[in-house]
Length: 122
Image (cartoon, rainbow, N blue to C red; front, side, top):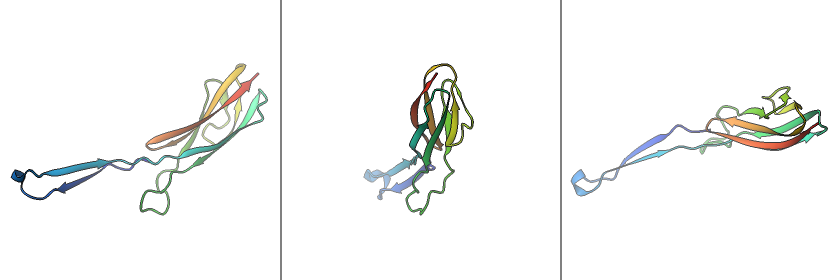
């Protein structure tokens, strides 16, 4: 998750004619969800059961638990179809014969994380 940019204005002290001034600091944090444990079973060339785990981002400093929006699962491939492309557990139905890369993306504000597997379609 991407935290709102925070601006901290700090005076270095002294007057402007003493060579001191102000320092402006802007910072942004991105906490990403992770994709873990991607599995393809069985890889039989027709329909394939896909499963993955999305681990939510860690809590922000000073928080006990992650409080941002839940990451969203999104399966993609250049051919074929998914029975539920937004579920971590879905079935991939092959299209044309050949090797197809299936990718599970954990979509979260500020960053997306991906994990892929190769499926053999016959």
